[in-house]
Amino acid sequence: MFKPEAFVTRLTFLASDRPEAQEARERLAERYGDAGADGAQVVVALGGDGFMLETVHACMGRAKPIYGMNRGSVGFLMNEYSEDGLLERINAAERAVIHPLRMTAVDVAGQRHDAVAFNEVSLLRQTRQTAKLRISVDGKVRLSELSCDGALVATPAGSTAYNLSAHGPIIPLDAKILALTPISAFRPRRWRGALLAHTAKVDFKILEADKRPVSAVADNFEVRHVADVRVAEDRDVSITMLFDAGRSLEERVLAEQFAV
Image 1 (spheres, one colour):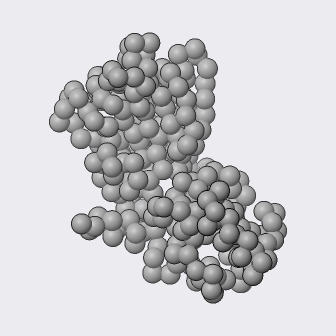
Image 2 (cartoon, helix red, strand yellow):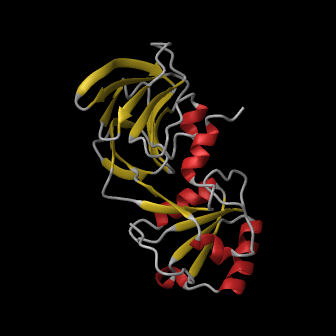
């Protein structure tokens, strides 16, 4: 976990490939200097939420907090863009410590694939036919057959993303809960998903995997033609994200529940 020093002065800037993000990086680096990945105390990410996720994955293991500014289309995980008073904003920022999900997927050929997801792990049908999934929680079968477009497990931080679009619940950041949400459930049609303890281990068995192929996606890492997928929180991995004072991630998640 990041331990703040007396005053943050050394930054490094990363930008998406959007022209406005690249231009912002050049201006900010010229104004505040760029200490590089090794010398910086804070990583400043310039782009949208997709680029923030890329930055989070790239910075795992570096123990450096990430402060995002929106130079993309969606900016739920980003702060408002401004070139003035950046050091003061960062030093006054509120911190959110995020733990990811770890996905272990075995494909139909028997090959194992491991990945982490800070938003969600999604299982998605690959063809016109519905997927058929068997879902177990902590070793006990809870749903013997779900016919659907897919299903996902979301972290609290990711509960306002794909999970919300799939009509899953918004979860407070400190709730220690995971969302298990179906995507266009066909049978049983009325199943709306479940809230699970953050310690839960969720296993998906793909039924009729050859006839009804399914892919598994951990944030932006995809495995095609999976046969079995396990999802569980990884408490040994964490990332610290910085948000402007009064606009913490906890506040954003709470406010999203009252959005109309």
